[in-house]
Length: 189
Image (tube, rainbow, N blue to C red; front, top):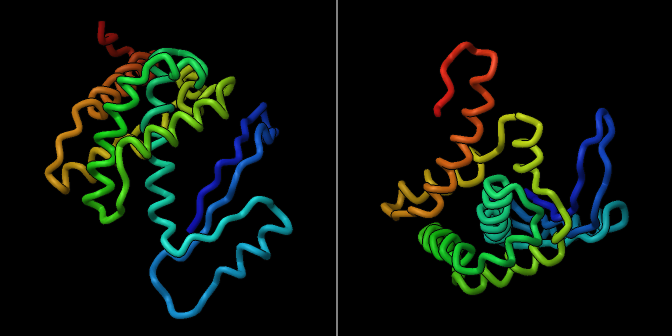
């Protein structure tokens, strides 16, 4: 399994690489043998590559970043860097995500997640998140796979995540505003 922090955007039929990042890879499940050499092979063609024996922890960390940056920028129509002015909201989201991550069996803290999210916000301050790009282009967003996934895992563990629920509902409301266009259905307002 893997994930990357490289950034890209589409311009018509062309994919433009916007920023370098790190590709994190690791086994989907515990296996016999050491496959970390795969990171060395991939390093030669797509630097930087990092091997993780527990890739799921890294995937959860990336989900935490996306649970904060994507919906907030989509709701407030702002570049990533503007989120720095909302530390309390970021912390609330990180507290909820950390509670779910702990129940999923990976140790973390809300403070660690917040610090990582802030690093990503600083490193990508001028970027427009993919969710905001989708909203601006009147496309369906990936909210179901980001905050929606977190909501499903929280529900499975009996954890209340009111801030993530609020963000999920706000983005879904934005989607419904433009997805009703051309359907003949009345708008929600």
